[in-house]
Length: 255
Image 1 (cartoon, helix red, strand yellow):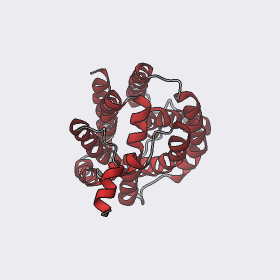
Image 2 (image 1 turned 180 degrees about the vertical axis):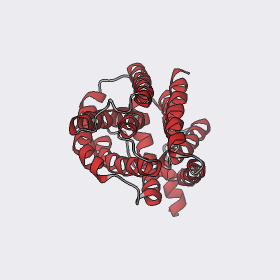
Image 3 (image 1 turned 135 degrees about the vertical axis):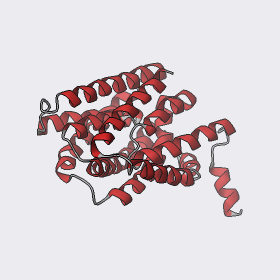
């Protein structure tokens, strides 16, 4: 059997043209998010969840995230704060395990409520940080709490962007360091999540991966758009851009 026919046979036949269009939009937004347009990926989460359900949508999105993470790290790999990453990784891994054990009991309705609440709380903290820059300590304890929250929300709904933005904004990382550190954090975290999705939740299979591979061109286009947009911002303007995109994501979640 020709290779092309074999590949198409692996793609889930139940995916409809309209659903392919949604997947394409998600790939474009995630590509933008991984090169600095924070919030673009979050806007696609409620749309994908409404079509495929909360837990399944997390599995569908994860291979897209993994591919986009590679692009983000490739472009921003020189810009990263490893001091903060080393603090976060062990706690984030614990958060993924907690999310794996509890996420199976979260239905779609509770998923949407939980994700919306996380965005609103994160947005409130971001705004508070802008007025109280010296009130949040850059301590191992704060990093630990942020890591657990990031790992949990990433596993349950791929929504750790807003949680981790709170931490990285609080430690006042410059624009490129912010993007590079975020890129490395999610590259490691998302690869760590893959076995849990494959063997515990069973939300990723060969068909899922093959379908997502067809979205690579849109991921690349989104990444290029993100690079172009982010270059136009100063460090301070970029901080407010992150807050604004989180607010837009909250509105999309309500819708």
